[in-house]
Image 1 (cartoon, rainbow over the protein chains, first blue to last red):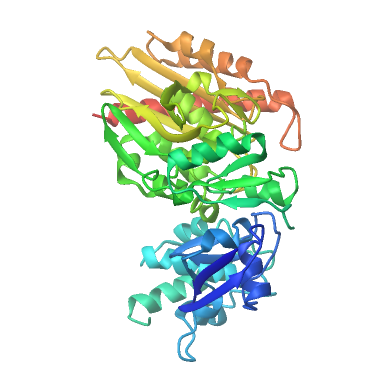
Image 2 (cartoon, chains in turn blue, orange):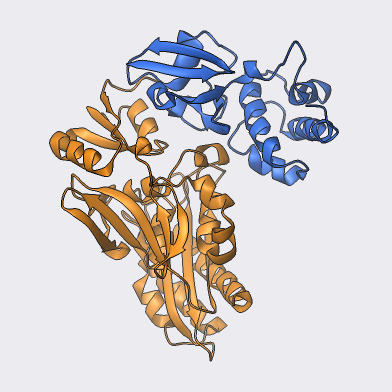
Length: 157
Length: 291
């Protein structure tokens, strides 16, 4: 089946089997390997991407379902060589250790901050409760998201 | 994990989808949010030869009050319910439910129609809708029909939907004055199925006697359970501590849980008892504030 999708603003076309998962289209067919596969069972959220602006688990969706849609992956965060405030926040606050969950954390947080300009720590914890991190204990991830929220409120993207 | 191969169909109308389902029969599954079906297919616990994706059918995603009902389109995402001002202010039972289903990312795709039609006794909306006294609207080749929720769940993962029918809408009666509900769920972690959960919806008459009561139980039996005896003990009564205590005992009696990693039978039954007390108290507090 022919599938046309836009990923990070760029149009892509591929001939795929209906059973191909969206995450496999992104990683294996289009070679955008920033998106990770973690648990592969809809629990961990490492594969989170934005589908028309909403965070979804790309291991739990078929590529054919994304036809005609706008997808954003972690590769789409950086603009003109400049990191997104979330990426800066994760660096500055040490929001990762092994980094495996980070692409999903970034994408979920990106969608969340689009709707919540001044979240509480509790709001952030609830928002990322579908993304699992086994290293950090989440403390620095919450700080990283707050770092980005503050920067974005002050016009930093 | 890779699901078994299947043929993909993307109808753009209910008539087209229904004709496809009739032709393909048992070999076909409806793809709605996919958040239960796709994991099952990846584990090869479900191996449909045909998927009928209903996401391209227009007009199945809405939340509005009309004709004395809250009408919710089957393709409405859980996150839409969670964010709806109408649901938050007027339907606390449904608002509670939409906040505890799976996790926030899953809720962006998961649909209310899928949650009901999948008929997993561990799903949350079935108990909620039993408590709310909802109606299911089903559309097939013969047209549309409305089913009371009490007759919808016919067994584990089984519903009264015919092979060519699609659940298109859920209708919840618009609450009378001094009505409110609550849904309380105990889960080991976000995203886990309920160890047990209790849904309650009450209406108080002018003299504070309970004129309408619905109690639904999640994941303590082979189907979602309507705790009829507990409801009967409260109907026409003042909801004082004694009446609530007795109803909670009857709700625990109605539960038929199985022992598993989430706990033994006695624990789950007692959880139903405690959650029934708390849900009734919360509903009472909310009803006192409701117009």
